[in-house]
Image (cartoon, rainbow, N blue to C red; front, side, top):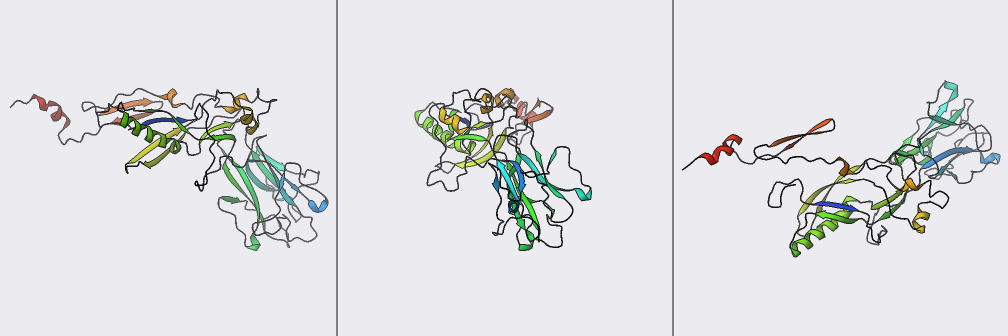
Length: 367
């Protein structure tokens, strides 16, 4: 950045926002904040299974059964079939294991072969064959699971539904329909399974972000108050989801830095265009008993899970990758900088209409 008296600047204000070290406030929505995003989203889906309720099977402990479709029809995967047992799909959410990445169907009668990392639901929890087809050919559910070292920000399965195409039902927005009808027989409804993928959520605590430091700081008392007021308003734009404390699996990779832009207007009507880079760093403060309970870190796994409440490396800190670059001048308007494998150019466009050599040599003339 140039000096304050110079109009050529890379930025007007530089703000560091994050979690306050002294009594951080919970990011709870007020009555005037309509549409505030929930800081505690649903846990990802980790397991699926099928059951035959007509044969006395029930959903296992911790599983949820999909009982109805969008329009209220029974979500029986053999819906409309004659002399076939009813079969329903169940799923379980949680953070106890890596979540599911995809869900599919495989038909053994057509010679289909699963992928290397694909798991097949061959039996129900009670040991019966988990065939979901009402014809002679067997159709089984399949799924792919994330590896333990996956980043916590990857897209995973977060919801599943069943639709009946012959009843006019269509997939909900952002849902993917598996293009295979579960009922291949002459009689039966057109049953399809749909699922939604979203960014994986983790155990988290959300707090109101605060400004930890800002630059420049004006010496005058009046201007200093204006700068401080502007800096305080920027914190929520930099971290719209709040300052988060997240609990990650020990072996997972740290998430990538997130770059975003925003526009804000002060009380005088002046627009400010901002760009922010958000990242996680190690949380070194001691967690309270309430925080440990909310993060599901009990006394038996505090030692093993200690690294889960942090970024396991400091590679996400932009300060680790900062470089000193010469500011362009009229004599050197183009500055090239080698950043890793890329070459970045910093240019200073002169507003004068005179050629650069004439502009530099102009003081030599005498009148």
